[in-house]
Length: 215
Image (cartoon, rainbow, N blue to C red; front, side):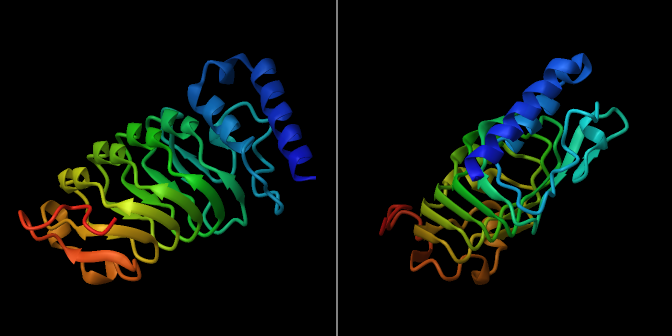
């Protein structure tokens, strides 16, 4: 049943793009349609994302600016299952990516590093796996990054210390390893931001141990 639903969703999106030239030229609409095709949505939260609505700015859980550019994707706590795809990186004007408290699986796409206007990334309380992409260090506008309560592994990318606008970070309750950076905004984050990562060894001792010590 789940696979049938995904096929129907994909077919609906393809029909939407075929009958709507306005959206066919809209890469954001295409990206959102591709994202929907990856998802299982038992509560029909995405019911408004269909071919009868010409502009993605009319869809529920999508917010656009005055120029009809998608700036917010709100699907938190929606009982959605699926994966995050590279198409999300095409939402070039996105400022808020709110996908918390669902059942998203798989890796965090490297393409999320293309969201140069992103202010908030909330992916907490899912089932995401793999390493935190180094590409997230390109998100120079980012102020909130909450990836806690997933299944993330590997070391904390040192490139993230360049995110000078980052005010809130939570990597707790994962399976991260190595040491905690101490430079840049990491000097301000409390220990609670990193707790319950059994292989994470505490603040980095510069020059005395490799940052991925214990991985």
